[in-house]
Amino acid sequence: MSARKRPEIDLSVAREVCSPLSVERFTFQYGMTAIAFFLTFLALLPLFSLVWEILGQGLSNLKPEMFVKQVIDFGFANAIVGTLKMVTIGSLFSIPVGVMTGIFLSEFGGNSKIASIVRFITTILAGVPSIVVGVFAYGVFIATTKQFSAVAGGFALGVIMLPVIALTTEEVLKLVPNSLRLASAALGGNRFQTTFRVVLAAGLPGITTATLLAIARASGETAPLIFTALFSDFWSESLLRPTASLPVLIYRFYQQDDPQIFQLVWTASIVLVGLVFLLNLLSRVITSRKLK
Amino acid sequence: MSNLIPAITVKNLAFYYGTFKALQGVSLDIYQKQVTALIGPSGCGKSTFIKSLNRIGELEADVRIEGKVEFFGQNIYSSRVNTNRLRRQMGMVFQKPNLFPMSIYDNVAYGIRIARHCPKSELDGIVEDAIKGAALWDEVKDKLYKSALGLSGGQQQRLCIARSLAVRPKVLLMDEPCSALDPIATMKIEELIDSLRGELTIAIVTHNMQQAQRVADFTAFFSTDESRAGQMVEFGTTDQIFNNSLDQRTRDYVSGRFG
Picture (cartoon, rainbow over the protein chains, first blue to last red):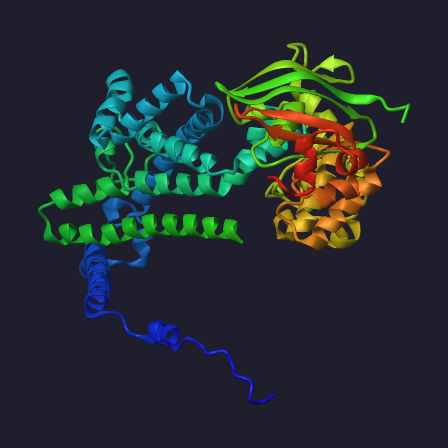
């Protein structure tokens, strides 16, 4: 029985899977990888050089007491608080309106004519230059009340945040699987219950991220604040008074002739970039928690 | 057999997606407290048919129907019908488990919570009964407040059944509930269907003919003709359809010579 012939194995298949790639394919593969890495590096270069530059120029002037002193005493505290105040005012107005608009576009409007009109207008609004939004807020508040204020600045920031929140909310809600809507409907849930108990709950982490990114963007805006909130070297006593903000602070310092103050441009930039970085980090943390 | 009362009576139903005719001339009784299986090749309109019974198909697409679907004598496509109340009476289990991203408890309680205010103690009881009814209690009783998405596929599907049972429907519609499950999980679902027999009216779409033979009292065979509109070819007791069918197409299908 041992003499029984074993069936022959075709060895050419084994040779084929072990043979190296041809020179052209090899070069193409590694060449493309190298180009991809190089271009990625090129894309990151501005970010790294920016951080490097502002840290190098500004870090030596950064002192802890700058976070409690007002601008007149070479601090940033009232500008930080002013930025936070105005972003809060903007959020109070743009988050509810924006999220509701997103819900309408995704859940109720569908492909109706009114939904596509709303979507079109929102997209246009997202592309309006921020200086124009500033002019608009000036027209609404300053031209009527003759008073530069944090409320006007906050309103301008809200107008900038609104389309970002509305459009991303729509995108996030569209990603919620339709099977969840059907499950809710099959249990007798009406559209309102399905939207607010199931779809919104499933999309909440995404909406939170979108909102925080909108806030991060708005807190770096300068143009809409220049002629709405104006600026103040002191703690502002009311929301209806001119209010300082970090971006406008940087702009003001830049215009100063005193080289000592001019140098603080870099230091203020560190604080602003740090604030935006923290907000982005927060949105990352919230998103990653959702994935668990 | 003389005391069979229909829960759902379908009369000459035609179903269109836009201008595409998906079903035509379907007439069928789904009897109370019996299990009815719907079998047939892919694309023959079984799923369309079962989705027309609780009017959930119209949420997915632009649909139009002709004919009548009577649920306990009421035509469900009448303008007087409240679709939310209708769907509460007809639980539905889908092909893939579609639990909400919430805790196990909240998933089962959802149907009750959206309908009425229910004290916590009563709700606890309903949730427990529903999960026990779906033969899942021992597996999940220690993690009721953990995410339902952490369960295995078979457990998720049984939790979907529990979620449907919690609102105490008259009818349970199942659209290929085992198509994404392994044989053991499938067996548990079949045991569950068996335990619900006699209490609940069940209609189940299945591609698995052994499954139809194991669980169903009645079987309806659907097929398509040249015009691509699905129709019901034959309806009868499961035994009759599989062993003594009247139509050649049914005989070919159940013997595996077609589809």
